[in-house]
Structure formats: structure tokens, C-alpha cells
Image: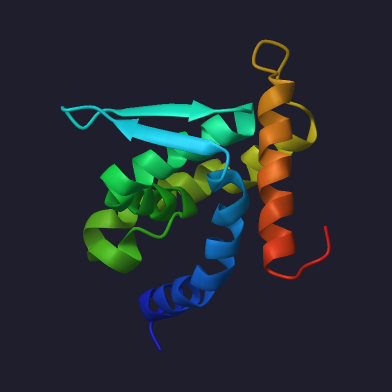
Length: 136
């Protein structure tokens, strides 16, 4: 089985858990689209607003989210072949995933430390783990 098939297979298995994840925040969010299709997001909490923003983005540009995720994993060559190899080498050399985890663990730099963002990320991860039946 190719790596691409493995990724697609894993994504399809995750759909039921993702639907459970979406249920709670979705009840507190209203997304209204005007006559031009521009989303206007109304929510009672910051987490709800973030959820609404990402939901609207996924509706409009899911392909872009998917491509960005694959790019940041350093796995573009699996999709695009040799054309994506330069990106993969740079991403892996820069160790993006490792740096992001370190940045999160240490609370970010002094100039860019946003505790509310970390709380939103923690909340999102906690909901995802519980929906998948994993320990927090």
C-alpha cells in the first residue's frame, strides 16, 4: 500500500470521530453568508469563533488546508513526485514539527506569547482526544 493510500485510509477512518468533535462547538456558532458569499461568524466564546472560522475556511478552501498540511509534514513529493522534493528537504531540514512542539512547550517567544491561543489549542486537542476515546 502506498503512503498516499495510507493517508487517505487513515483520514476516512477518522471521519466519525471528527463528526463527534464538531457537534459541541457547532451548537454555539452561527455562520451567516451574505449575498457575496462572505462568511460572518457569530459565537459566544473565542473557541466557538475559532471553530466557525476554520469551518468556513474548510467549506471554501479544503483543498488548500490539505495541501498546506501535507507541505508542512514534508511529504509533498509523495503527491507531486520529484517536483515536491525540494520543499520536503527544506521542511525536514528546518525541523518544522519539532520547532512547533518546542515553541508550544515553552510558551512561545516573549514578543509572540499568546496564552489565549494556547488555551484554544489545548481545548481543541482535548476534544479531539476524548472523541477518539483517548486519555487526555
